[in-house]
Amino acid sequence: MAILAVLISLGLLMWVAYRGFSVILFAPICALLAVVLSGNIDQILPFFTGVFMVKMVEFIKLYFPIFLLGAVFGKVIELSGSAHSISKLIIHIVGEKRAILAIVLAGAVLTYGGVSVFVAVFALYPFASSLFREANIPKRLIPGTIGLGIFTVSMDALPGTPQIQNVIPTSFFGTNLYAAPILGIMGSLIIITFGVLYLEWRKKQAVQAGEGYGTGHINEPESSDQQNLPHWSIALLPLIAVGVANKVLTTVIPNWYANGFNFETIGLKAKDYPPIEIKKVAGIWGLEIALVIGILLVLVFNFQHIRRTLQTGLNTGIAGSLLATINTASEYGYGAVIAALPGFALVKQGLTTFSGNPLINEAVSINILAGMTGSASGGLSIALASIGQDVLTKANAMGIDPEVLHRVASMAAGGMDTLPHNGAIITLLAITGLTHRQSYKDIFALTIIKTLTVFVVIALYMIFGIK
Image (cartoon, rainbow, N blue to C red; front, side):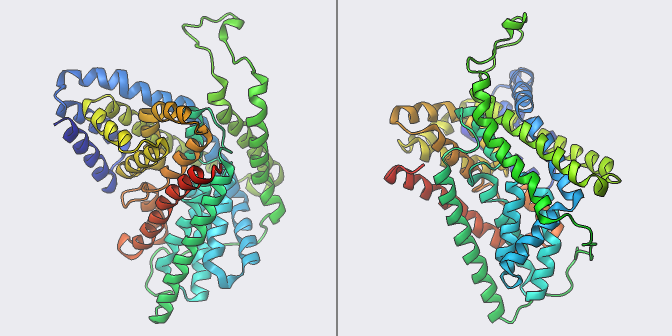
């Protein structure tokens, strides 16, 4: 019954997420349901206050500034027209005949530069629609094409990406965003290569069948004003600055606090203000400062262009960051409750003992939990909070670099998370005016490619020692 309690709870959470209900409400409900089904009805309130809320607040403390600054950065990039300018540049370089590759690369550049995946969808869809219509490529392939660009390599595989899936492992393994760079680059090349080949094959099938862009579609983008966009060099500058500043800061911040930081040195009590372990927050601090630099650069070069819409845009971005943070933090709190129950201990034992390799254990566990919750960041947070210390201990004993643990964890989070109930997938389909029946097949094929690539990366490390 202990395992069944966990499975029922997870199944219910997955179902309500699929039906479009907010996990902010249903994550604690499902967590406490698991407590009841485990035979601990008298422990509902202690679990809610002492486990769920504590872990939820812990997540917010660490990651809310990144969600907030990332949303603000993405919004000012959008308002300034920089996202459109960068997309047009890549399409010009690659060529309109290579519409699929152009959209994939444009998405990768935007999200690697710090633009949120949701903002990237809005920026890319008008260009994708125009290019696909001109090339007579079925519109139903647009979600898979955009997804390959923003949900894969630039979200968690490429070293240095500021997306949250690449940030979360830093606090568990004491790494930075550039962990295992060679493995990340090799994994990215595999995903992009096979992903584009798959989509091109699907396009060829459609051409042979006489299928074109199609008619009667909904949510077709209106013609937008493409005048007065910033020059591509100005548009790229903040993205480059964020990447460079992040790299430099994650290196120098530990040197600024070589001995850590103890609040007792400034007269505060340690019991109220515990010492800060710099290695666990250096990556987070570095990214926060880098995003601030990027935001300021966008404002300096484009203030006249965005000043009239800045207030509304900022309010929208901030509201979105709050929702995203609380959603993920609720899943983190949910995971903490589940991890404290007897049923999860049995599941965890099963996940961590089927293989002696901590990298495989980590990849399988994160994939399963990300798939169950429909959230890469949520599944990653739940898994690492539960087994992170175990896999780190085993990895150290086997001489496996924590950087490899970081890269495998990050990439695994973006594997099976994109099941039908994933919120980003639902949003992507809604924006493009398509349904699961029309387009999810191609998204799922890319999900399989991404998931398998994680195990290829593990094999490359174990056989050749590449990192």
